[in-house]
Image: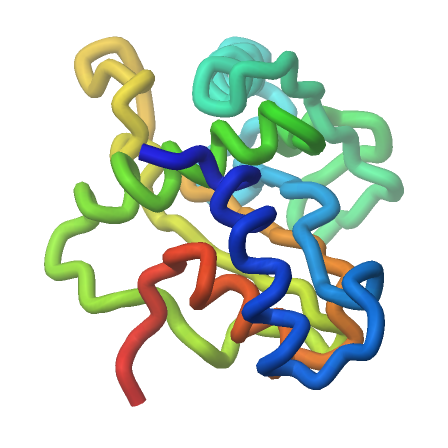
Amino acid sequence: MLSLREQYKELVPEILSNLNYSNKMEVPKIVKVSINMGLGKISDAGKDGKLIEEAVEELSRIANQRAVATKAKKSEAGFKLREGSSIGARVTLRGNLMYEFLMKLLHLALPRVRDFRGISRKAFDKSGNYNLGITDHLIFPEIDPTKTSKNKGMNITIVTTANKDEDALFLLEKLGFPFKKN
């Protein structure tokens, strides 16, 4: 099976002709993948340091790269949140680790989602980037359900060089992302 990077290299001429670009350097590509795991609604994550450590460790195992804890930028009394308290974990992937994670997401994790019918075509921002929300991190094979204390959701942002959402959608479809049928 070809890696995602090799698939992209083979698809460049097809994308170039279908999107009417004049130069192969204009062809959109994936720049980075940002994964964010917010723990605000699960519990008082700022008070429970063990939950933050668990989230950082699990996200590091999923991404094959060390994740960092995110801190609150300002206090918010309504949420009982203090400035500087830990509220989640995040990691940014580039290069080979990015392509490995996307392969794992497409071929191992998403097929494990119950009643999966595809990912939404409407989750693009106006700059050609795609946002995918996952409600349960247990779909990744690295996570042992018996060793995790709570189910955690995550947001995955795929940043592309596409200027339009249509170009980014075409790129991701060609790379094998399972979008819902219209």
